[in-house]
Image (cartoon, rainbow, N blue to C red):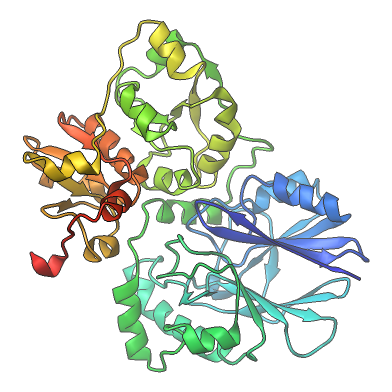
Length: 465
Protein backbone atom coordinates (compact mmCIF):
# COMPACT_ATOMS: atom_id res chain seq x y z
CA UNK A 1 0.00 0.00 0.00
CA UNK A 2 0.95 3.61 -0.61
CA UNK A 3 -1.06 6.20 1.26
CA UNK A 4 -2.17 8.87 -1.17
CA UNK A 5 -2.64 12.16 0.63
CA UNK A 6 -3.23 15.36 -1.29
CA UNK A 7 -3.77 18.74 0.34
CA UNK A 8 -5.45 21.00 -2.24
CA UNK A 9 -5.44 24.77 -1.69
CA UNK A 10 -8.12 27.03 -3.14
CA UNK A 11 -6.27 30.34 -3.32
CA UNK A 12 -8.21 33.45 -2.44
CA UNK A 13 -10.56 31.79 0.03
CA UNK A 14 -7.45 30.06 1.49
CA UNK A 15 -9.40 26.81 1.76
CA UNK A 16 -7.72 23.43 2.11
CA UNK A 17 -9.49 20.29 0.95
CA UNK A 18 -8.09 16.79 1.03
CA UNK A 19 -7.99 13.64 -1.09
CA UNK A 20 -6.76 10.61 0.79
CA UNK A 21 -6.82 6.88 0.23
CA UNK A 22 -4.97 3.62 -0.46
CA UNK A 23 -3.64 2.88 -3.93
CA UNK A 24 -3.54 -0.87 -3.23
CA UNK A 25 -7.27 -0.89 -2.52
CA UNK A 26 -7.85 1.76 -5.24
CA UNK A 27 -10.28 3.76 -3.08
CA UNK A 28 -10.17 7.24 -1.58
CA UNK A 29 -12.19 9.97 0.09
CA UNK A 30 -12.42 13.71 -0.46
CA UNK A 31 -12.94 16.06 2.49
CA UNK A 32 -14.35 19.62 2.22
CA UNK A 33 -14.31 19.98 -1.61
CA UNK A 34 -14.67 23.32 -3.36
CA UNK A 35 -17.27 23.66 -6.16
CA UNK A 36 -14.89 23.45 -9.14
CA UNK A 37 -14.38 19.74 -8.56
CA UNK A 38 -12.37 18.67 -11.62
CA UNK A 39 -9.21 18.87 -9.53
CA UNK A 40 -10.36 15.91 -7.38
CA UNK A 41 -11.43 13.82 -10.34
CA UNK A 42 -8.08 14.43 -12.03
CA UNK A 43 -6.11 13.57 -8.89
CA UNK A 44 -8.04 10.34 -8.39
CA UNK A 45 -7.38 9.32 -11.99
CA UNK A 46 -3.70 10.13 -11.62
CA UNK A 47 -3.39 7.78 -8.65
CA UNK A 48 -5.72 5.06 -9.98
CA UNK A 49 -8.28 5.64 -7.22
CA UNK A 50 -12.06 5.61 -7.06
CA UNK A 51 -13.66 8.30 -4.90
CA UNK A 52 -16.20 6.46 -2.76
CA UNK A 53 -16.80 8.92 0.10
CA UNK A 54 -17.17 12.71 0.24
CA UNK A 55 -17.05 14.29 3.70
CA UNK A 56 -17.80 17.72 5.11
CA UNK A 57 -16.26 18.73 8.43
CA UNK A 58 -19.02 21.29 9.00
CA UNK A 59 -21.48 23.62 7.28
CA UNK A 60 -19.15 26.12 5.64
CA UNK A 61 -19.70 29.86 5.64
CA UNK A 62 -16.72 31.17 3.68
CA UNK A 63 -17.00 29.23 0.42
CA UNK A 64 -19.61 27.32 -1.53
CA UNK A 65 -19.40 23.62 -0.83
CA UNK A 66 -18.61 21.37 -3.77
CA UNK A 67 -19.68 18.17 -2.02
CA UNK A 68 -22.97 17.75 -3.88
CA UNK A 69 -21.34 18.74 -7.16
CA UNK A 70 -18.63 16.10 -6.71
CA UNK A 71 -21.04 13.35 -5.71
CA UNK A 72 -23.17 14.10 -8.76
CA UNK A 73 -20.14 14.02 -11.05
CA UNK A 74 -19.27 10.58 -9.67
CA UNK A 75 -22.58 9.19 -10.93
CA UNK A 76 -23.81 7.57 -7.75
CA UNK A 77 -20.55 5.80 -6.87
CA UNK A 78 -19.85 8.06 -3.86
CA UNK A 79 -22.01 9.12 -0.96
CA UNK A 80 -21.98 12.39 0.94
CA UNK A 81 -21.27 12.22 4.67
CA UNK A 82 -22.10 15.10 7.02
CA UNK A 83 -22.25 15.58 10.78
CA UNK A 84 -25.67 15.58 12.40
CA UNK A 85 -24.29 16.29 15.85
CA UNK A 86 -25.45 19.48 17.52
CA UNK A 87 -28.87 19.25 15.85
CA UNK A 88 -27.62 20.00 12.33
CA UNK A 89 -30.18 19.67 9.54
CA UNK A 90 -29.69 19.61 5.78
CA UNK A 91 -31.86 20.13 2.73
CA UNK A 92 -30.25 17.39 0.62
CA UNK A 93 -29.68 13.63 0.69
CA UNK A 94 -26.82 12.62 2.95
CA UNK A 95 -25.31 9.95 5.13
CA UNK A 96 -25.19 10.70 8.85
CA UNK A 97 -21.88 10.94 10.71
CA UNK A 98 -21.79 10.72 14.49
CA UNK A 99 -18.97 11.02 17.00
CA UNK A 100 -16.86 7.86 16.92
CA UNK A 101 -17.91 6.62 13.48
CA UNK A 102 -15.09 4.95 11.56
CA UNK A 103 -14.33 4.59 7.85
CA UNK A 104 -11.68 2.49 6.12
CA UNK A 105 -9.89 3.02 2.85
CA UNK A 106 -7.59 0.06 2.53
CA UNK A 107 -4.94 0.51 5.21
CA UNK A 108 -6.14 3.99 6.14
CA UNK A 109 -8.67 4.38 8.96
CA UNK A 110 -10.59 7.61 9.60
CA UNK A 111 -12.41 8.23 12.86
CA UNK A 112 -14.94 11.03 13.35
CA UNK A 113 -14.49 13.14 16.46
CA UNK A 114 -17.10 15.72 17.49
CA UNK A 115 -15.30 19.06 17.89
CA UNK A 116 -17.94 21.80 18.32
CA UNK A 117 -17.27 25.49 18.83
CA UNK A 118 -16.68 26.98 15.41
CA UNK A 119 -20.10 25.55 14.55
CA UNK A 120 -22.48 23.40 16.63
CA UNK A 121 -22.06 20.33 14.38
CA UNK A 122 -18.33 20.51 13.65
CA UNK A 123 -16.56 17.17 13.09
CA UNK A 124 -12.83 16.50 12.80
CA UNK A 125 -11.39 13.32 11.30
CA UNK A 126 -8.55 11.47 13.01
CA UNK A 127 -6.25 9.46 10.72
CA UNK A 128 -4.76 6.07 11.66
CA UNK A 129 -2.61 3.37 10.14
CA UNK A 130 -4.90 0.33 10.26
CA UNK A 131 -5.86 -0.63 13.81
CA UNK A 132 -3.21 1.41 15.62
CA UNK A 133 -4.54 3.27 18.65
CA UNK A 134 -2.71 6.56 18.14
CA UNK A 135 -3.55 8.81 15.18
CA UNK A 136 -0.76 10.14 12.98
CA UNK A 137 -2.83 13.08 11.79
CA UNK A 138 -6.11 14.91 12.09
CA UNK A 139 -8.19 16.82 9.55
CA UNK A 140 -9.17 19.59 11.93
CA UNK A 141 -11.57 21.51 9.70
CA UNK A 142 -12.19 24.95 11.16
CA UNK A 143 -11.86 23.85 14.78
CA UNK A 144 -8.07 24.21 14.95
CA UNK A 145 -5.64 26.09 12.70
CA UNK A 146 -1.93 26.73 12.46
CA UNK A 147 -1.25 29.41 15.11
CA UNK A 148 -4.99 29.86 15.65
CA UNK A 149 -8.40 28.33 16.30
CA UNK A 150 -11.79 28.67 14.63
CA UNK A 151 -13.90 31.68 15.43
CA UNK A 152 -17.10 30.91 17.41
CA UNK A 153 -19.15 33.98 16.48
CA UNK A 154 -20.52 33.12 13.03
CA UNK A 155 -23.84 31.67 14.23
CA UNK A 156 -25.15 34.93 15.71
CA UNK A 157 -24.85 36.69 19.05
CA UNK A 158 -27.34 34.36 20.75
CA UNK A 159 -25.04 31.36 20.23
CA UNK A 160 -21.60 32.95 20.52
CA UNK A 161 -21.10 32.50 24.27
CA UNK A 162 -22.14 28.84 24.22
CA UNK A 163 -20.01 28.09 21.17
CA UNK A 164 -17.00 29.90 22.66
CA UNK A 165 -17.18 27.64 25.70
CA UNK A 166 -17.50 24.55 23.50
CA UNK A 167 -14.55 25.69 21.39
CA UNK A 168 -12.46 26.17 24.52
CA UNK A 169 -13.13 22.58 25.59
CA UNK A 170 -12.56 21.29 22.05
CA UNK A 171 -9.12 22.93 22.02
CA UNK A 172 -8.17 21.90 25.56
CA UNK A 173 -9.80 18.46 25.85
CA UNK A 174 -9.44 17.17 22.30
CA UNK A 175 -6.53 18.75 20.45
CA UNK A 176 -4.24 19.51 23.39
CA UNK A 177 -4.81 15.96 24.67
CA UNK A 178 -3.18 14.50 21.53
CA UNK A 179 0.49 13.41 21.39
CA UNK A 180 2.99 16.02 20.21
CA UNK A 181 3.79 14.24 16.93
CA UNK A 182 0.22 14.21 15.57
CA UNK A 183 0.03 16.34 12.42
CA UNK A 184 -2.67 18.98 12.10
CA UNK A 185 -4.21 19.49 8.65
CA UNK A 186 -6.64 22.44 8.81
CA UNK A 187 -9.37 23.53 6.40
CA UNK A 188 -7.87 27.02 6.06
CA UNK A 189 -4.57 28.82 5.78
CA UNK A 190 -3.50 32.43 6.15
CA UNK A 191 -5.92 34.92 4.63
CA UNK A 192 -9.12 33.27 5.80
CA UNK A 193 -11.42 35.14 8.17
CA UNK A 194 -12.58 31.86 9.77
CA UNK A 195 -10.10 32.38 12.58
CA UNK A 196 -7.89 35.15 13.98
CA UNK A 197 -4.31 35.47 12.71
CA UNK A 198 -4.07 32.08 10.99
CA UNK A 199 -0.45 31.15 10.31
CA UNK A 200 1.24 30.91 6.93
CA UNK A 201 2.14 27.22 7.13
CA UNK A 202 -0.25 24.67 5.62
CA UNK A 203 0.12 22.12 8.42
CA UNK A 204 1.64 21.81 11.87
CA UNK A 205 2.03 19.41 14.77
CA UNK A 206 0.31 19.31 18.12
CA UNK A 207 3.69 19.74 19.80
CA UNK A 208 4.50 22.89 17.88
CA UNK A 209 1.06 24.35 18.50
CA UNK A 210 1.27 23.47 22.19
CA UNK A 211 4.39 25.65 22.38
CA UNK A 212 3.54 28.51 20.04
CA UNK A 213 -0.22 28.76 19.47
CA UNK A 214 -1.32 31.58 21.77
CA UNK A 215 -4.96 30.49 21.67
CA UNK A 216 -4.18 26.86 22.50
CA UNK A 217 -2.07 27.94 25.49
CA UNK A 218 -4.96 29.75 27.23
CA UNK A 219 -6.07 27.73 30.26
CA UNK A 220 -8.85 30.01 31.54
CA UNK A 221 -12.27 30.02 29.88
CA UNK A 222 -12.83 33.68 30.76
CA UNK A 223 -9.50 34.68 29.23
CA UNK A 224 -10.32 32.60 26.14
CA UNK A 225 -13.66 34.40 25.77
CA UNK A 226 -12.00 37.79 26.08
CA UNK A 227 -9.28 37.03 23.54
CA UNK A 228 -11.68 35.55 20.98
CA UNK A 229 -13.91 38.62 21.18
CA UNK A 230 -10.95 40.97 20.80
CA UNK A 231 -9.06 39.18 18.03
CA UNK A 232 -11.85 38.15 15.67
CA UNK A 233 -11.50 39.78 12.22
CA UNK A 234 -14.50 41.46 10.52
CA UNK A 235 -17.13 38.98 9.31
CA UNK A 236 -17.38 39.05 5.50
CA UNK A 237 -20.89 39.76 4.28
CA UNK A 238 -21.13 36.53 2.30
CA UNK A 239 -20.62 34.29 5.33
CA UNK A 240 -24.23 34.30 6.64
CA UNK A 241 -25.54 33.81 3.09
CA UNK A 242 -23.28 30.87 2.26
CA UNK A 243 -24.01 29.22 5.59
CA UNK A 244 -27.66 29.00 4.52
CA UNK A 245 -26.82 27.93 0.96
CA UNK A 246 -24.56 25.12 2.14
CA UNK A 247 -27.06 23.84 4.69
CA UNK A 248 -29.81 23.76 2.10
CA UNK A 249 -27.50 22.33 -0.56
CA UNK A 250 -25.97 24.33 -3.44
CA UNK A 251 -27.45 23.81 -6.87
CA UNK A 252 -25.67 21.10 -8.86
CA UNK A 253 -24.50 22.64 -12.15
CA UNK A 254 -22.46 19.75 -13.64
CA UNK A 255 -20.14 22.28 -15.23
CA UNK A 256 -19.00 25.86 -14.84
CA UNK A 257 -21.80 28.41 -14.59
CA UNK A 258 -22.92 29.59 -18.03
CA UNK A 259 -21.58 32.97 -19.16
CA UNK A 260 -22.56 33.92 -22.74
CA UNK A 261 -20.42 36.25 -24.89
CA UNK A 262 -22.11 39.57 -25.67
CA UNK A 263 -21.45 41.98 -28.49
CA UNK A 264 -20.76 45.59 -27.60
CA UNK A 265 -24.33 46.53 -28.51
CA UNK A 266 -25.88 43.78 -26.38
CA UNK A 267 -23.53 44.41 -23.47
CA UNK A 268 -24.35 48.12 -23.52
CA UNK A 269 -28.08 47.48 -23.62
CA UNK A 270 -27.97 44.80 -20.93
CA UNK A 271 -25.99 46.97 -18.52
CA UNK A 272 -28.10 50.10 -18.78
CA UNK A 273 -29.56 51.30 -15.51
CA UNK A 274 -27.15 50.10 -12.86
CA UNK A 275 -26.20 46.56 -13.80
CA UNK A 276 -23.53 44.73 -11.81
CA UNK A 277 -20.37 44.99 -13.94
CA UNK A 278 -17.10 43.47 -12.77
CA UNK A 279 -13.93 44.46 -14.63
CA UNK A 280 -11.15 41.98 -13.82
CA UNK A 281 -8.26 43.80 -15.52
CA UNK A 282 -5.18 45.24 -13.84
CA UNK A 283 -5.70 48.53 -12.00
CA UNK A 284 -3.64 50.51 -14.49
CA UNK A 285 -5.65 49.26 -17.46
CA UNK A 286 -8.89 49.84 -15.59
CA UNK A 287 -7.90 53.37 -14.62
CA UNK A 288 -7.07 54.25 -18.23
CA UNK A 289 -10.58 53.40 -19.40
CA UNK A 290 -13.55 51.30 -18.30
CA UNK A 291 -17.29 50.96 -18.71
CA UNK A 292 -18.85 53.52 -16.41
CA UNK A 293 -20.09 52.03 -13.13
CA UNK A 294 -17.77 49.00 -13.27
CA UNK A 295 -16.23 47.52 -10.15
CA UNK A 296 -12.54 46.72 -10.60
CA UNK A 297 -11.77 43.39 -8.91
CA UNK A 298 -8.65 42.06 -10.61
CA UNK A 299 -8.37 38.44 -11.79
CA UNK A 300 -6.32 37.30 -8.83
CA UNK A 301 -7.27 34.68 -6.21
CA UNK A 302 -8.52 37.46 -3.90
CA UNK A 303 -11.32 38.03 -6.39
CA UNK A 304 -13.32 35.32 -4.61
CA UNK A 305 -13.33 37.03 -1.24
CA UNK A 306 -13.93 40.59 -2.43
CA UNK A 307 -16.73 39.48 -4.71
CA UNK A 308 -18.26 37.84 -1.66
CA UNK A 309 -17.95 41.04 0.34
CA UNK A 310 -19.23 43.44 -2.32
CA UNK A 311 -21.41 41.78 -4.97
CA UNK A 312 -25.13 41.05 -4.89
CA UNK A 313 -25.80 37.32 -5.51
CA UNK A 314 -29.35 38.12 -6.61
CA UNK A 315 -28.20 40.25 -9.55
CA UNK A 316 -26.54 38.83 -12.67
CA UNK A 317 -22.86 39.66 -13.12
CA UNK A 318 -21.52 41.15 -16.35
CA UNK A 319 -17.80 40.64 -16.89
CA UNK A 320 -15.11 42.66 -18.63
CA UNK A 321 -11.91 40.62 -18.99
CA UNK A 322 -8.31 41.30 -19.90
CA UNK A 323 -8.60 38.50 -22.46
CA UNK A 324 -11.62 36.40 -23.32
CA UNK A 325 -9.54 33.29 -22.54
CA UNK A 326 -9.49 34.37 -18.88
CA UNK A 327 -13.19 33.54 -18.52
CA UNK A 328 -13.02 29.99 -17.03
CA UNK A 329 -10.54 31.00 -14.34
CA UNK A 330 -12.52 34.09 -13.36
CA UNK A 331 -15.79 32.14 -13.20
CA UNK A 332 -14.22 29.52 -10.93
CA UNK A 333 -13.10 32.22 -8.51
CA UNK A 334 -16.59 33.71 -8.42
CA UNK A 335 -18.25 30.31 -8.07
CA UNK A 336 -16.21 29.60 -4.94
CA UNK A 337 -18.08 32.30 -3.04
CA UNK A 338 -21.46 31.36 -4.44
CA UNK A 339 -21.91 33.41 -7.62
CA UNK A 340 -23.60 31.41 -10.37
CA UNK A 341 -25.78 34.00 -12.13
CA UNK A 342 -24.08 35.75 -15.04
CA UNK A 343 -25.52 38.04 -17.66
CA UNK A 344 -22.53 37.56 -19.96
CA UNK A 345 -19.10 38.92 -20.77
CA UNK A 346 -18.01 41.66 -23.17
CA UNK A 347 -16.64 39.80 -26.20
CA UNK A 348 -13.38 41.43 -27.27
CA UNK A 349 -13.15 43.37 -24.01
CA UNK A 350 -12.46 47.08 -23.80
CA UNK A 351 -10.74 47.09 -27.19
CA UNK A 352 -14.06 46.21 -28.81
CA UNK A 353 -15.83 48.77 -26.63
CA UNK A 354 -13.49 51.61 -27.63
CA UNK A 355 -13.45 50.67 -31.30
CA UNK A 356 -17.23 50.80 -31.32
CA UNK A 357 -17.02 54.44 -30.28
CA UNK A 358 -18.52 53.88 -26.84
CA UNK A 359 -17.87 56.32 -24.04
CA UNK A 360 -15.68 55.21 -21.15
CA UNK A 361 -14.77 56.47 -17.70
CA UNK A 362 -11.33 56.88 -16.16
CA UNK A 363 -9.78 56.91 -12.69
CA UNK A 364 -6.43 58.74 -12.40
CA UNK A 365 -3.51 56.86 -10.85
CA UNK A 366 -1.23 58.79 -8.52
CA UNK A 367 2.24 57.70 -7.37
CA UNK A 368 3.24 57.80 -3.73
CA UNK A 369 5.76 60.52 -4.62
CA UNK A 370 3.05 62.74 -6.08
CA UNK A 371 0.75 61.97 -3.16
CA UNK A 372 3.39 62.95 -0.60
CA UNK A 373 3.69 66.41 -2.13
CA UNK A 374 -0.03 66.92 -2.79
CA UNK A 375 -1.67 69.55 -0.59
CA UNK A 376 -5.31 69.01 -1.45
CA UNK A 377 -5.67 65.19 -1.59
CA UNK A 378 -6.75 63.12 1.42
CA UNK A 379 -5.33 59.57 1.57
CA UNK A 380 -8.14 57.06 2.12
CA UNK A 381 -6.87 53.87 3.78
CA UNK A 382 -9.13 50.89 2.95
CA UNK A 383 -7.10 48.20 4.73
CA UNK A 384 -8.32 46.09 7.64
CA UNK A 385 -8.43 47.73 11.08
CA UNK A 386 -5.33 45.91 12.34
CA UNK A 387 -3.37 47.07 9.29
CA UNK A 388 -4.47 50.65 9.91
CA UNK A 389 -3.49 50.48 13.57
CA UNK A 390 -0.05 49.19 12.64
CA UNK A 391 0.70 52.44 10.79
CA UNK A 392 -0.76 54.57 8.02
CA UNK A 393 -0.09 57.60 5.84
CA UNK A 394 -0.09 60.92 7.71
CA UNK A 395 -3.44 62.67 7.56
CA UNK A 396 -5.23 59.62 6.19
CA UNK A 397 -8.87 58.71 6.71
CA UNK A 398 -9.76 55.07 7.36
CA UNK A 399 -12.67 53.13 5.84
CA UNK A 400 -12.23 49.36 5.61
CA UNK A 401 -13.07 48.17 2.09
CA UNK A 402 -15.54 45.54 3.26
CA UNK A 403 -17.55 48.27 5.00
CA UNK A 404 -16.92 51.10 2.54
CA UNK A 405 -20.39 51.05 1.04
CA UNK A 406 -21.90 51.64 4.48
CA UNK A 407 -19.31 54.29 5.41
CA UNK A 408 -19.64 56.40 2.27
CA UNK A 409 -22.01 58.76 4.03
CA UNK A 410 -19.19 59.65 6.44
CA UNK A 411 -16.94 60.82 3.59
CA UNK A 412 -16.90 64.41 2.37
CA UNK A 413 -17.83 64.36 -1.33
CA UNK A 414 -16.24 67.76 -1.82
CA UNK A 415 -12.82 66.35 -0.99
CA UNK A 416 -10.33 64.70 -3.33
CA UNK A 417 -9.44 61.21 -2.11
CA UNK A 418 -6.57 58.90 -3.04
CA UNK A 419 -7.37 55.31 -2.09
CA UNK A 420 -4.59 53.06 -0.87
CA UNK A 421 -4.17 49.58 0.65
CA UNK A 422 -1.12 47.30 0.88
CA UNK A 423 -0.35 47.04 -2.86
CA UNK A 424 -3.11 48.86 -4.74
CA UNK A 425 -5.39 45.87 -5.47
CA UNK A 426 -7.99 46.67 -2.80
CA UNK A 427 -7.45 50.39 -3.36
CA UNK A 428 -8.55 50.08 -6.97
CA UNK A 429 -11.67 48.19 -5.88
CA UNK A 430 -12.41 51.02 -3.47
CA UNK A 431 -11.77 53.74 -6.05
CA UNK A 432 -14.08 52.05 -8.54
CA UNK A 433 -16.77 51.60 -5.89
CA UNK A 434 -16.62 55.27 -4.92
CA UNK A 435 -16.66 56.38 -8.55
CA UNK A 436 -19.69 54.17 -9.23
CA UNK A 437 -21.47 55.93 -6.36
CA UNK A 438 -20.86 59.42 -7.68
CA UNK A 439 -17.58 60.50 -6.06
CA UNK A 440 -15.99 62.70 -8.71
CA UNK A 441 -12.42 63.37 -7.53
CA UNK A 442 -11.01 59.93 -6.83
CA UNK A 443 -7.50 58.67 -7.47
CA UNK A 444 -5.89 55.28 -6.92
CA UNK A 445 -2.39 54.70 -5.52
CA UNK A 446 -0.56 51.84 -7.29
CA UNK A 447 1.94 50.22 -4.96
CA UNK A 448 0.14 51.86 -2.03
CA UNK A 449 1.54 51.15 1.44
CA UNK A 450 4.38 48.96 0.14
CA UNK A 451 5.54 51.69 -2.23
CA UNK A 452 5.21 54.38 0.46
CA UNK A 453 7.26 52.29 2.90
CA UNK A 454 9.87 51.43 0.25
CA UNK A 455 10.30 55.15 -0.45
CA UNK A 456 11.04 55.74 3.23
CA UNK A 457 8.25 58.27 3.71
CA UNK A 458 6.93 59.05 7.22
CA UNK A 459 4.08 57.06 8.76
CA UNK A 460 1.60 57.74 11.50
CA UNK A 461 -0.04 55.55 14.12
CA UNK A 462 -3.42 56.09 15.83
CA UNK A 463 -1.65 57.04 19.09
CA UNK A 464 0.08 59.94 17.33
CA UNK A 465 -3.16 61.60 16.34
